[in-house]
Image (cartoon, rainbow, N blue to C red; front, side, top):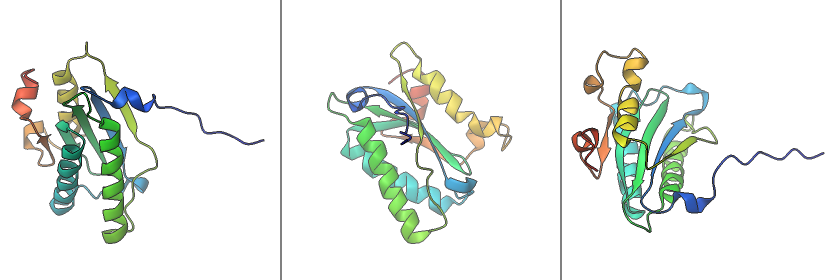
Length: 161
C-alpha cells in the first residue's frame, strides 16, 4: 500500500493578490547560521530581489539563529506571494549548496494567510518579539537581524500599510 503525503496547503490562487502571508522557514539540523551578519545580508539581498519580481513587500523579517520568520504582502492584484516564497527558497537553497553545503532548508515550511480582520501590526509585533521570547535579548529593538523591505517598519507598527 502506497502512503500518500497529506496535502496541507491551500490552492495556489489563495496566495495571489493583495494578501499577507506569514512564513516560518527552518534550517535542517538546527544549524545556527543566521548569527553571522554576512550570511543574513546575503539572504536579505536575495529576499529583496525576489519580492520585487512578484510585486510584494516584506512588512517584517526576522532571522533567528536557526530559522527565519517573515511576512510577505502582495501589493497588486497580480502579486504572487507563493511564487515569491518559492523563488526565495530556491535561490537561497542554491546559494547554500554552492557556498555552505552543510546548510540546507527543511523540506517544508509553515505558512499562515493573514485574514483581513487580523491586525497585521499585531502579527509583525509577534515576529519582532521572537528573539525576546527566546531570551536572546531584552528588547526587539536591540536585535540586528530583523527589518522590513519595501515599506517602513515604523509605519507597519502604527497600522499604516
